[in-house]
Figure 1 (cartoon, rainbow, N blue to C red):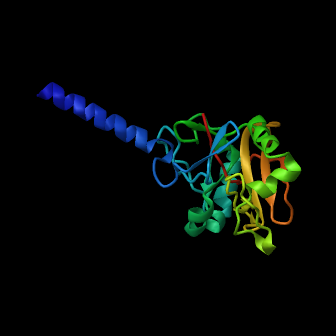
Figure 2: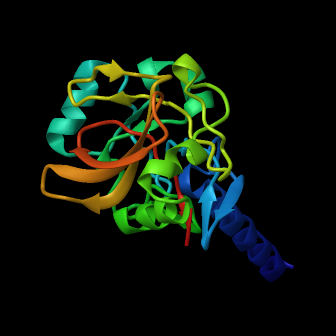
Length: 216
């Protein structure tokens, strides 16, 4: 009986570890959408733990955000530090969280590379056509909604600058890639309320952007 009890305990602990990885909670969403040969999460990442269970620091004040940025350390925040924005848009992460060896994406997923983002936009007709297909049907400022024909359901979650300033919720949606350009910058994609493009550019690693995961 003792041996059976030990086996059952081991199974239970293993199950708990699996469910707790990658935040294992409010945000490792099972909502997915298949676009071409890729399977994407259909909403932004909202985890507060790395895949190994370690907590990701929350930066509530401008000073805290800047301190983590200056140290090159992972951090997350809600837009304007309001949990209601987290429920709608997910969390904003700096690129140090994206690149952390402990794993930001839940088990079975990864943060898309710059090349994988290009595969998505090419499949949707290129950068000048893909944006409207990726934007949600509601939530964008000045009637800048998309068709969401891709099912990507892109929302305008805004962003946070290295000094802690928040900008453009309702107007911009920004998503990190896992690909760096230099020691200071990494590639990302963004959608804008007043056109149908999806744009590829690079930003400071200290910026706070949304994250969308891709199935392995």
